[in-house]
Length: 425
Ligand code: SF4
Image 1 (cartoon, rainbow, N blue to C red):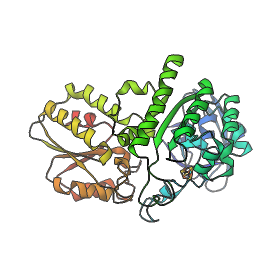
Image 2: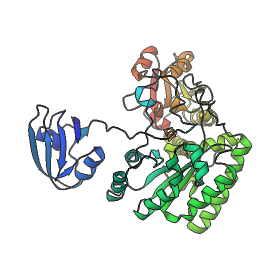
Image 3: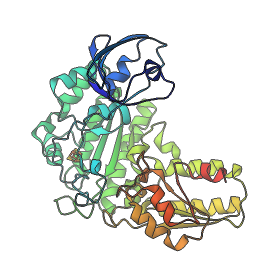
Image 4: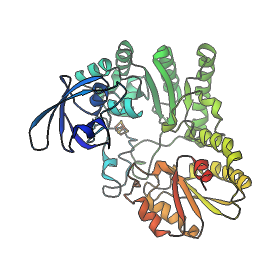
């Protein structure tokens, strides 16, 4: 059952007069368990929807529509499936104490539905029989799976959950059900690097086309989980992992015409090796996992330079974390040359997680406020939209409009594409 949070204006649900708070029980006789069921079942052309209105009365709606038209129901958020692992590097455990961040950030989720819908990586260790059946029945493909290691002992050391050792059987089961997988390895020195990494890459590649890609990201620690027995990778360890990945890429390119295995930007940065260009990443859309984000930004800015307007004399500040800082600075110089604007790049320090956390998306509103203070008489400030949720809240619950109110002279713009914002000036 789902409960209606709102209905979209002028949608079918709006025309039917479906109220906020209505419970949707079934569509065409099938129970609607969550928002994923709603998406699946509302795709039919003829619908019989059984519900309960907020006053408790039963209601049935008959609908005829095109298959590609949705009902316009926005359901209340589903209860997420919780993680049953105890990874020593867990980023949720690396959060500052409760109360410092938005409450939802303290939930350890491991939800295959979010994996299918939004590309969240899951471990498969909390799946019940009915979840496995549903994955196959609704063809939830591809799924994004944190494999970490195919060696059972190494995976157990990573996830600290007896069920983690079944990864081979779990992947067999997905393959038998026709479910493809984007796999991920979070690389922890002394646990799943070296020979274990070699074996994991080999085992996953040997599974054939069913494993669509493999991303390798270095473990990221914060000031709050750095004492739990896992270390950061050193630069020599990162270089070694990159060599192992390169060997796999070369083989995959020859045999399959795609590189298949991808190192995240952070692995290159920690190895002190230049992040490669777009051709490294093929057509894979793995940016949410930090794979290719720098190349995409570089490519996009450079291809847009020619269509930027001139705005001599305007002063712009770009705020980012230290991992992106040098790359953004180089692009800022190119943008300044193309537009005549004065562009500064400023590196914000993460006060929530500690300075070892260097990505812009994990900076809090207070960090941005401190970084912007010296630039309050500038015209425009840009930073990555990944630092905000859909309600324009930073991780530390600071609202974007609160930040803007503190700098009345400065136009503050979160951006997905820097050049798109600048082109509108
Ligand atoms: S899988 Fe590991 S890292 Fe992810 S939420 Fe669970 S314990 Fe944390």
